[in-house]
Each structure stands twice: as C-alpha cells, then as structure tokens.
Length: 127
Image: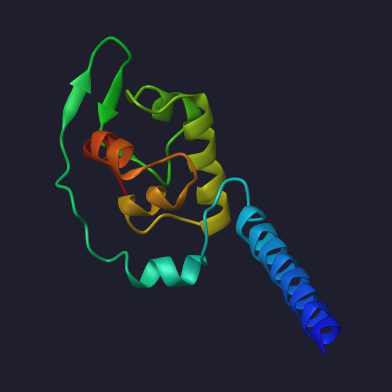
C-alpha cells in the first residue's frame, strides 16, 4: 500500500516537472523581435494616439521630426536619441511584418522597447 502511494507521488512529481518544462519552452520560444500577438489584434486598439506630434528641425543632421514610421529609413530612426541601430532595425523589421504602422504605440510590441523608451522617442515619431 505504501509502495503504491510513493509511486503515485513520484509520477505526479515527474508530471509536474514535465508540465513546467513545456511551459518554460513556450514562454521562451517567442519570436526574437516581436513579443506576442498578431497584427490584427494591435490594429484594433491602435486608433488612439497618446502623444501629440512635435515639430523639431535638427540642422546638424537635417532630419525633420516627427519622423513617419511608415517611410523612415534606418539612419532617420537612429538619429533619435534612445534608438540605436538594433532598435531602429527592429522597428523596420516590425514594419515589414505589419505592412504598415497604424499607431506609434505599436513599437512597444517590439522586444527591447519598453514603456520608458517609448515615452522618450514617441514625440519624435508619427504615422
């Protein structure tokens, strides 16, 4: 009788470890650039703009802000403080994935762009 209980407890323990392994695998196997969700679910919530455009002309680099996310080049995005080459490339890759941005806040779906970074760069971006 005690042997059956012990075997049952061991099997339950092994099953829990297996379930934990599967959950860990699923959690860590998200795409490298995008966090989660689909473009369709983001476009439904993206009709609201949270920031007002800021017009700034930077004469040193000859870039006019805000920069349109749907036409921006890598160099234009890299000119914004807080966006290095990696984040700028990720923004362009995500644009290719979406087809086009419908709201600036969609860049928060990119891995590596937190709400803090978004708050810093959003005034320099538009769609």
